[in-house]
Image (tube, rainbow, N blue to C red; front, side, top):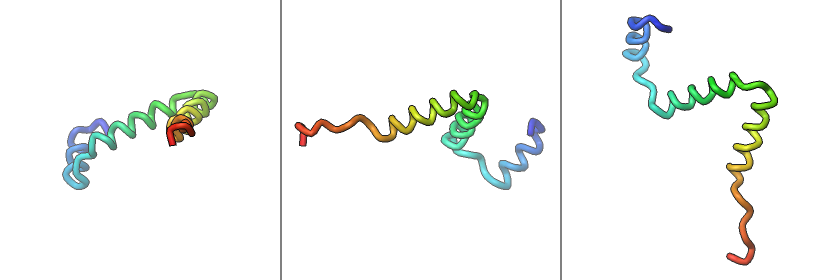
Amino acid sequence: MKNPTYVAELQKKLGAPSSETLESLRLLKAFLRLAPDQRSEVIELVERLAVGPPRDPSLS
């Protein structure tokens, strides 16, 4: 997809992708380059961050 004419035609038909889409594709590409054990570590880290820290019951 290095052909500038082809890329221009695609953008004309589909529109330019958002910056979020481009960043997501870059992250996916980087993730796929990782070794399988590194991928599982990344997934575990993201899952921990998504859950967030446990809430302090004294603050309720």
